[in-house]
Image 1 (cartoon, one colour):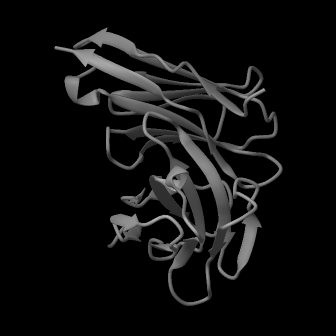
Image 2: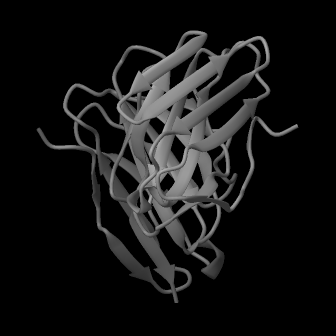
Length: 111
Length: 114
């Protein structure tokens, strides 16, 4: 079982729609959860982090964490073409502090 | 307020040469991660270090690769006797001393082995 799993996509949504990105993780003791955005040819950029169960909102972004289901999601409201990128889910494990990434989901927002 | 600095941004090496990649963490950060990324693929964990200590090197190939983070100076990822398969983007990220905190990435070093 992979440590962090994401649908590779591509996920295509029209401009103005809500994009929903999902991630599951295998280490039940994981403490911290992150979403990074990576444009083609660029380095990953941190956009959200969440440590507690529930929702965390920041502008158009909402991160959701459900530790019982070992599930993290990212919602992007009012999606813009500039949101088109690969979104990487990352988790810090419970037994060590290794930051492990999923393979990423490619999001395309169509004008 | 400089971010994570990696150099060089681009590095070309002939097969058999050595590659040295440098990473200076953000101010106040004492932990560094190194990742490798092949085109169209995800970030593959290589090593996690704090100053003068390797915390987790489970992702490092057993041969030719080494990493260090000395008390003074940048973290270094060293690849000896490079082969074409080492061509990739290498990213480092730094984080503060506290566990379970956010990590921020440098711009990466694109290594090309010819």
